[in-house]
Length: 565
Image (cartoon, rainbow, N blue to C red; front, side, top):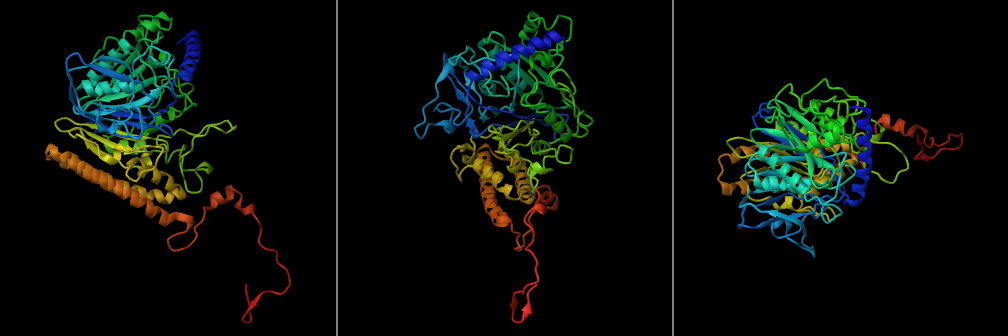
């Protein structure tokens, strides 16, 4: 791109982003998403994932939306999405959202024509998996345009939250989902929910046959949208981490690329692209990394590393213009859903960016770094894939000829446990429907894992061994449950999954008591005081502390005639 394009894009991004940010509700979804084609996986399933890396009051609940029939002429209400708890209140979307405690029902900001029949699906902040095995994972991205919702200072009707739900309700393929979301956004307008991360969105969209990377942002008018999608090759894996990744679009290849007419129209009108030239979607429409350099790139590099794609560069100048990472890549070996679990739990252990090492990790190797907004010290922490402020993580295992599986882990993935839910299921275990971030509840799986995440800070390196042992045991049990579902009657699916979820909930609350008894006050189980590692004592100046008592030649304390030494 020319210097003029860069300057114009950066100027418009700064103005439009700030205008949009101040008018939008504060939410944060600095999420990481992964995808794998069916020939890149060990079992032939299509995999995709999403870590909902929110802030303090994000709504962590998993809800089931039942299938429904609708009368001719019905209208589908569209709501304003804020993502904080409660993200929705109402009686028309299943028992999860019934008002209680004086909550007021959410009010729609608009309507579209309803369809005759809508499919059943699971949703958290976004639609996750429907009865046909269509799955979605989300990652907020920066963009050069931003706008507001209708009724909130703008004219756009759809956020990605609403688009993902409509895709769950109305489509039975990932390709159909992409086309539906794109067309609705073009017709009715698209707005980013709004946060420091950006005003655009990316989705991994998959079904048992194929997966797509879908990017979307508002158009310059604020009344339509610009979007593009690229198919993930069947033998590839892909990563999106809060920044667009689609580069050159082949407008003649409508099998591998889907797109709006505005992709070319806007770029041409602005003088950023000429017909006949390659069009780099990221270079033109992204606003690059936010927060700091490597905020996205490090996770892309780290995720590919965990999934068996090596040899990628660790450094670059400007990720918006430097296409140093592939849109997708072939892994050295087939991957599984457990590889996705491990990737979402990664803190770059064993690399030069290992967050369990160094003074910031403390004496016991804690990789988590709290958010901070009150310090006068300028700087940044490394952005890890695993994160303390994750609201939940899910992995979709879209499978042909049998039910698809949604693996769901509340709160921070490192201290959580993935439990399976089936596309044949018709409910969510109660403990996963409960999750008020303001009020601790022992009935809530979210709070069980949040409790553990904070408790392990007593002695992270040791306590995490206990957590990982329990994770491994229960996630293996979850795989046994999934295997058994293939022969289970529909009526037995909810029972099997519910019983397992209850066991996981109880096991993690029991673990919290065990960790407190084992690691509180710094004592070892035998009563000894292991204290701190020598390297940390030296780093904090332990050797420069108060000296030993002075020695003199005066009388010494004696006991039964013996001199105490």
